[in-house]
Amino acid sequence: MSRVCQITGKKVVAGNNVSHSNKKTKRKFYPNLQTKKFYIPEEDKWITLKVSTSAIRNINKKGISAVLAEAKAQGHL
Image (cartoon, rainbow, N blue to C red; front, side):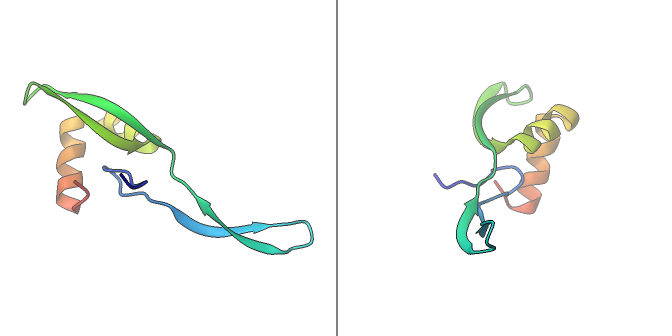
């Protein structure tokens, strides 16, 4: 599976390594993704998602059902 958050849609972005002499070489910035299981009480089941740590904080704040509904509306799921 690719390195994309299933909730926020965060993905790998490209940038440069910049040396002391200001020489630039290409590099990648990876999102901080974690594979985590969440329990959905409305459906009485567990789901496994690959989510960024900021998405985990959103889930803790708003609840898994609200975050999943937002992600489906934005087309991330």
